[in-house]
Amino acid sequence: MERARMIEYLLENDITVFLCEATSNLDFDLFVSILNCIRLLWTTSRFFSEEHAAHAMSAVVRNLAHYASIGLKPAVDSCLNFLDDLLNGITQNKTAAPLSHQSAYSLVQLLACFNALPTHISSNPNSILSSALVLHALISYQPEDIIIKSSTAIILGEVLKKWFQILIECLNRSLLIDNGLSGMFYVVLCQLGLDVLRLQKPLCNGSPKTNFVQTILTDEQELNSLKQSAMEMWDNAVLVLSELVAFTKDHLNQLSTEEYSVFLKFLLNYFYESKNSESLSDFCDMLFTKGYLIMLPKVQIDRNDALVRKVSTLILSEMLKVLSDKYLNIESQNGPCAKDIHVSSNK
Image (cartoon, rainbow, N blue to C red):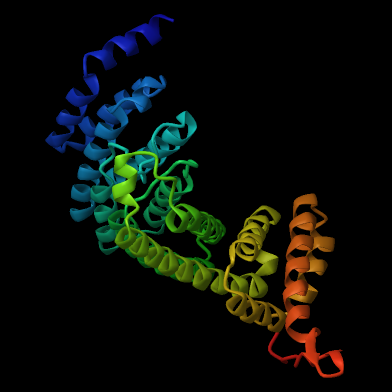
């Protein structure tokens, strides 16, 4: 109780601003001590409901850009771990999402930093993985009332496109050199892909115009820009999913049941969220060619896991429904007739 009162007192007297200003010193040892002090402050929800978390994020992102530019790896990792924990704290406390136009977070600064970051950490797989976890923590928090500005969506789309490519390369490289990170890269790619699929609703549908600000944000030009960004993000997520479909088939025995389950969730959500029947049909053809009609039931038997069994069955159901509509229900003058599915030898 005494500790809680002390933290309330410190927050009331703007200790966070003082600590964040001290980070401009750029001394790494001092910086780590400041981060530890800030972590003590966010044990209370007030840290997140007011602007303390926003001040902390801005200061750490500024220092992250500096430490990355001079190649100070321990400092970069400290910044990334702090941002990951901070964003997860925002989610747990259910305060304004950083992606929302209403939040006080310096999102443009964060995304600009992540746009430049790959140049400085390309040879460090651990830092790349930590960066991807920060992006996942940022995008996965999507409250029902979230409104995202088109300018934010455009920058976010550019950052995600770049990081998807980097993570695919890291996944394949990690498998070759066997650094023990391939499973983590696989999972975080699936999670980011899922985040992007879920992001389609707030980007495309917007929210009811309940006040003047929302009316401005949902004008026709804004909506068109949001839809364009949503489409580009969707296309990039589907490209990642296609890569993972091939990767999963080729390296199934090296994937744990938990890792495979995350991929199945990504795949199932694609079926549920897909609005373009032609693209979905082509995607199912690709799955069929890769042997997924055989692989899915076989793996659910081999793994003997309740979640794998349930999700695999749902995927098979969706896949068979699409393929049967395409090949088995073609209307002719004499009624429905069947069309052959040409089985490729490329499994």
